[in-house]
Structure formats: structure tokens, C-alpha cells
Image (cartoon, rainbow, N blue to C red; front, top):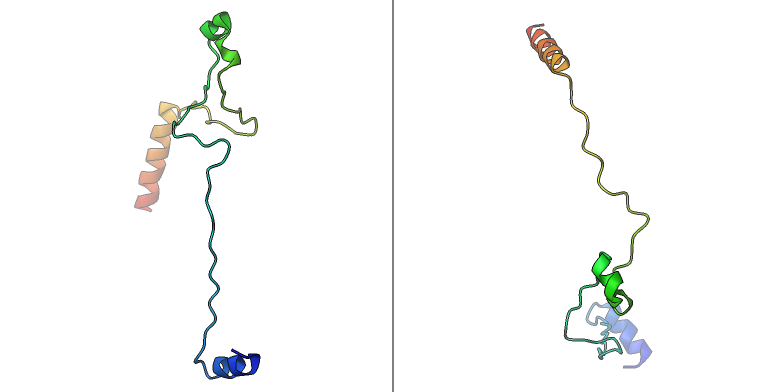
Amino acid sequence: LPERERAELKRRKLLTEVTLKSYWIRKGSAFSTAVARPETELTPEMIATGSWRRLPFKPYNFSSLGLPPACGHLHPLLKVRSELRQIFLEMG
């Protein structure tokens, strides 16, 4: 359509423009049908046989924080004290 007619139809809301996008997907150089899991640990057997040289290893994440250590508990007398405090607060 000429630009003038297209603008008129848009103004009257009789025409909407739609943009279509398409993609071509092709197999890359690293395409494989088998799922290979990278190794996460280096064992003494791998070092002894030299198999570690040809195995893929998972990259190590040095910026991860890890799990916080599970340590520390309230002393039994502190637990009793907090329970008594809660009882007295409920009583007013």
C-alpha cells in the first residue's frame, strides 16, 4: 500500500502492522546426541592411570558462598528462661 493510504487506514484502526521474526536452527560443531557429565572430583586412581588428562572436568566456582556451618544451640537454662519470659509476657 502507498504510505498515504496506509496512514489513513492506521488512523481509522482498520490496519495493524505485525512484525514476524523467524530463526534458523542448525547443528553446531559441538552438537552431540549423548549427554556427557563432566567429572567433579579428581581421584587417586585417575592420577595413577593418567585418565584425568582426557576427561572433561566441571569448572570450579570460586565465588560461591557454600553452606553456612550448622553450629551452636541455646543452653537449656536459656531456653527455660525465654519460655518463662514468654509466659509472664502473656500474663501481662
